[in-house]
Length: 259
Image 1 (tube, rainbow, N blue to C red):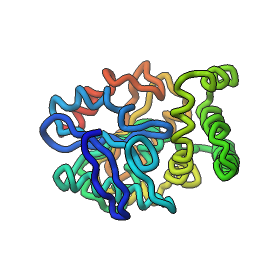
Image 2 (image 1 turned 45 degrees about the horizontal axis):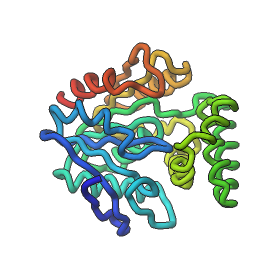
Image 3 (image 1 turned 60 degrees about the vertical axis):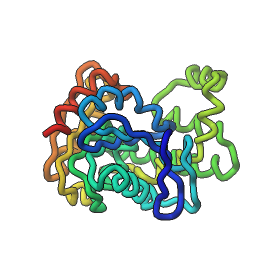
Image 4 (image 1 turned 45 degrees about the vertical axis):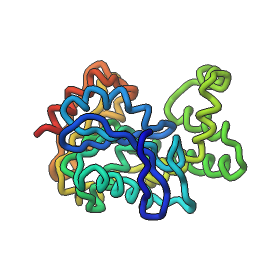
C-alpha cells in the first residue's frame, strides 16, 4: 500500500489508488486484504480512480480497540474524503454488508455494488451463524487463532480434508495473523439475517450480484437485497461461484458505475 490515512479514532488505514476518473472504492470480505482485490482493480482503473485498502486489523492498516462497526464506517468515510469526497463502493461477502451499512449511515456514495452478501435466509442458517459467533468469540478470547480460522472455513462449507490441508500450507500463518478480524466481519453481519429496515433506508442505486454456480441460498440472499433496497437491481453471473473471476465481474461493474 502506498498511502496511509488517519481514521477518526486515529487508526492508520493503508490504501492504494490506481487510474483516473470517478472514484470507486473496493471493500474486501473476511480473511482478506486490499491485495485480494488488486486483480479486480486493474481493469477498473482503465475508466475509474480505483482504491483498494486494508481494512483495520489486517495487512498494513492499524487497529484501535475496542472494535465497533461504526469505526469501519469511519474508515470508509476517511478514504472517500481522501479520494475526492464522493465515491461508488463495491463490497464482496461481508465487505458487501459493510458498504450497505456505510451507505445507510449517510456517507457520500454515488452507487453501490455488492457480491453475495451471506445473509441467512431461514432459521437453520441463522442458528448456524449464531453458533459460529459463540464458538468464534470463545476461540479468539482463548488465543486459539488457528481454531478460529477453522471455524470460519467450515462456515464457508469447506470439508475437513481441505481444512487439514490448509493448516499445512504456507498461507496458514498469514491467515492466523488476521484471525482476530473475523470477529469484525461477524459484527458487520449483525445477527446474520437480512437487515430489512437498514436496506430500506439506502437512498442510492444498489446492484446485487451472485454467481450462477453458487449455492441457491446465496442467490436468494442477493436477490432479497435487491428487492429490499428502494433502487435495487439483481444480476446473476453465470458460471461464477463465491470466488468470482475478476475478468467476468469487471465489465459488469464498469458498465454499472459509468451510469
